[in-house]
Length: 516
Ligand code: KIV
Ligand code: ZN
Image (tube, rainbow, N blue to C red; front, top):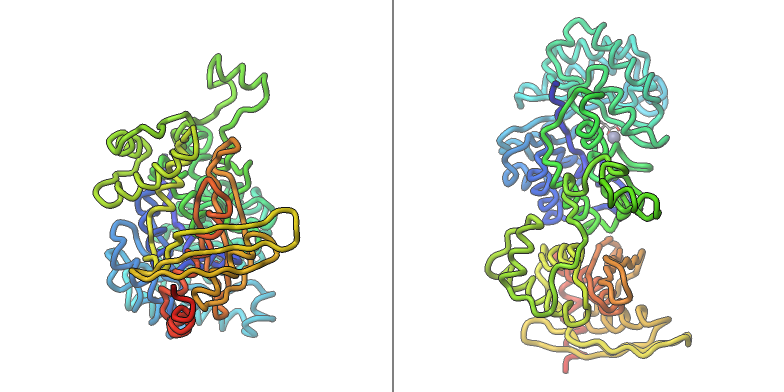
C-alpha cells in the first residue's frame, strides 16, 4: 500500500469561503490542530494577498514545526519573493506557484499565448527553486485544459525544478473516470514524471470533489489537496475527513493509506466550525451530528445485536466520544480533568480552573452533561483573544410584543458600566445596549443559534458575524440561556475588534459617558 500525502489547504483555499475569514491567532490555532491531525503539508495562505495573510503565514511557519508549510504565489517574482519571505523560517518550506493553462483562462483572463504561459511557468519554478528546496507547480483549470499542453508544461516545470505537480479541477467540472484517466495519461506521457509527485486538487461544484480525488489516487496521484469540513469557495473543496476515512475504511479496495491521526478528525472539524461559524449539515459524512446516529427502530435493533450490522466505522475512530451522561453538578475538578483526558484534552492549572468554573455554571442549570457539552465548554473557554469587556449582568424584558428592553452591565478591568436600550426583539435590544456602552456600533450580518445536545435544558451555542468599522468579525459563546449566549457571542466579536486596536479611541470616549 503506498502512502498518499495529505496537503491541507483549509487556511488558504478554505479561508476563501464567504464569511470564513480568520484572524492570526485563529489561523495559528487551526494550524496547530492540523499538526495534531498529522497532515503532511499545511498550506498556510497566500502571502501577497494581504499584510494579514503574510503575518499569519510567517507565524505558522515559525510555530508549527512538524509539517511542511506551503505558501501560494502566482507565477511572478513579486509573489514568489513574498511567499518565500513568509515561509523561509519554516523547518520544511514549500513554494506553491500556479498559472492558468486552459484556453478559456489564457484568452479571457491572462490574454497570453500558450507559449508565453509555458515560459512564465518555467521561469517562476526556476526562480522559486533558486530560493526554496521544494517547489510545487499547479496548472489552474487543468481539467478544462488541453492534455497535450498540460504534458508539455508539466515536463518543462519538472525540468525547471518542481517536485510536486498539481492538477486542479478548479471549477469542479471533472467526473471521476475522466479525472482518473487524465492522471493516468499525464503520468504515462510526461517523460520525467518519475521525478515528481502528482497531486489532485478538487472543487466540489458537482458534489464530486471526494470521488474525483479518489479516482486520481487510483490512477497515480500521491498527494491530495483538501480542506477540513470541505470548506472552500463556492461549493467548497474535497473534504479531508471523507478522503481519509474512505481510504481507511475501504483500504482493501483502494490500496492506499494516509498518516492522518483519524481520532483528531472530529476535534478539527469542531474547531473550524467554531472559529468560522460555518457549521456542517447534520447529515454530513464523518463529522455531521447524525453521521453515527441510528434512528430507525430496525437499525437500532441491529446495532444492539451487533454494531457491524449498520456501522462501517466506529465514531471513536474519528474522535467522536459516545454521548453518554458523564458528569453531574457534584463532580469535582479531578473527575472533570479525568473526563477531559478521555476526550483527548490535557487540562492543568488555569485552563482546568476555567473549565471547572464554566462546568459548574452549566451543571447548575442542566441535569445531564454530555461529552459534547464538555467539548463546547472547553472550546468556548479557550480564549484566543483576551476579553476587553466581560458581561456581568443582563436583564431582558420581552415577549410577543414588537419592542423589548435590555439592561446590560459590562466590566473592563476594575471599571463597570450599566446601560439599557430598546430594540426589535430581545437580542436586538441586548446588542444595542452593548453598543451604547462600548461606543462601537456593530452591524449584525449573520446570527446562528444551535443546540449542542438534546433536551429543553440543552446548551445552546450562538454564533455571530458582525461588521465593525467595515470589517467582519465573528463571535461565539455557549450557555444554557440563549439570550446570554447571544450577548456573549456579540461581546466576543466586540473584543476581537478591540483587540485589533483600530477602534479604541472611540470606545474610551463613549464609555466614560455611561460609566457608573
Ligand atoms: O483551484 C485551484 O485551481 C487552486 C490553485 C491555486 C491550486 O486553488
Ligand atoms: Zn482551489
